Length: 471
Ligand code: MSP
Image 1 (tube, rainbow, N blue to C red):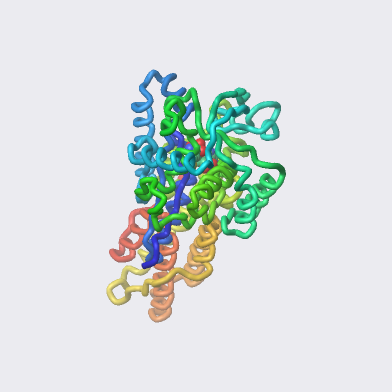
Image 2: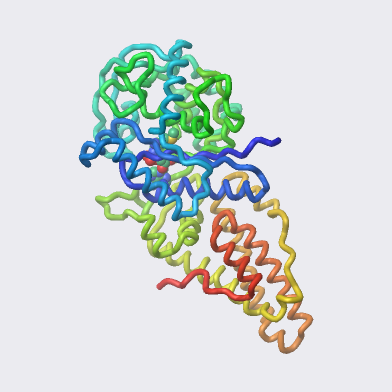
């Protein structure tokens, strides 16, 4: 039996409500999961929430709630949003689940017993927003560029993970593609980082963070939140931390991550795996960020695009289409309210919606005698795009087919043919029905609800408008 296709998203911090960036990664993973299922493969699609650490401890305190109650309420928001966005995950994991915490402790004990972790002292500049130590070179004007805050200087007793020891082997695996970093630009970025200087051993424990998993060999410390979080990629499969029984799904076929969390994934996570003699990641696919009007979304700038507002305006499939078609998945993607409406109207309301309503109406008389041959497999060139995670290009591919079909109708004028040349009319309509069936198949992973509606419309011969034109 072939092992299931395993796709992961990062697990999201629950320091605040979910935002569009979270939705973006999860949607991409959902499309891939649906695509793989459509190829007949079994799929394990994991997502979830990262619920420990300083940042969340602080937020819970600010809100006057107990940390567990606080994380429960935000985790629920994520689960509800994934429901609204039609996310088809196999499992939603939370790092505060008991099984996960026990596995984390087992792994830390193992790392300690193997001598991969040792007690020492750690000094560095810590950005709570990133939950990461920063090198002076990472800062701009002394501030973390992602959070625009001055990191605090920390000096504390800590347990350190040996990084120097695995550095050469890590470089080798990345260079040979054993650990594949895509796209190429991100591979280059990580290799130049790794070759620049000797990696410092990193702290894997925190002394004054109580909201975390206690180290089994020294409960005065809790596990560093990233170490806890990375292990979700295995515990989500039901793994209990026993090195003799690594789940067959691991390593994942693809792990989607945003560019801001590439370095930790490509270094700390791989180092942990190497120390444990667990296979390293197969493919880390890094995507860019969503910008709003060319800028990072921020409350101060007032340019935050809310997922709920998008859902209200464009519906689930409209939102899915707009996010994934806005630009190349590896690059930063810019959204503006005007462009979203324009694309929605052109591609969905006028393009696809119009095509479906025209074809359903025109084919009314023929439905009894003709049912289109539904293609059994996706075209090769389309598969290549999705195998390479070129999601926007895959949508462009379907968009071309939609415009071609609309143009074909305009040129052949079947509403005239029906009166003048019945044979020619039938040829035209049969071609349209067949083409539309193929398009529906291509669109399925992206627009699951709409595809179902189209299939139904083609069968029953009636349709309500799929997408209302917006002004
Ligand atoms: N908890 C860690 C990940 C641990 S995975 C073992 C974390 N969480 S996060 O909630 O801050 O971010 C999760 C993901 O959302 C990251 O991949 C990040 O790149 C993505 N995004 C956050 N803002 C984004 C945009 N504006 N646009 C696209 N994705 C962005 O990091």
